[in-house]
Amino acid sequence: MAARKADARWEGGLKDGHGNMKMAGWEGPFTFKSRFEEGEGTNPEVLLAAAHSGCFSMALSADLEKAGHTPEFVETTATVELRGGDAPPIRSITLDTRAKVPGISDEEFQQIAEGAKAGCPVSQALAAVPTITLNATLES
Image (cartoon, rainbow, N blue to C red; front, side, top):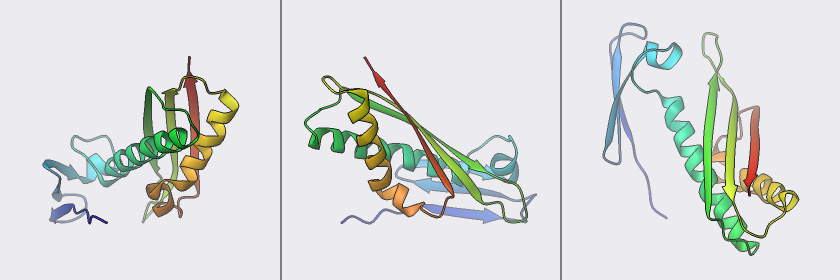
């Protein structure tokens, strides 16, 4: 298997400091405000959301194909909610996905989507998150 890496550097204190993250040709700044408020920049949680949405979309596509239904597309938005406190935990992740899959019933689609949510490697890595909700829509 391939090993994947990303780097982050933080300078200064928690509230007045600033940082930078790098991965696969992308680089972005982050601050206390971009993480815990609505400031400019990125944050670790948006990177988790990107990882989860990408992993789930691929897992669902693979599982649909295994069931004999090749999707025209699978599109997922992951929303990671960080709650307050001294060490704010990630309390929930919502996966809003829609897909166009010829010849499949909504019932079978929902069943395969739930299986993909459980089997996605990023979902498994995030198993400590109390709630991962899936809202799956089959496009006609």
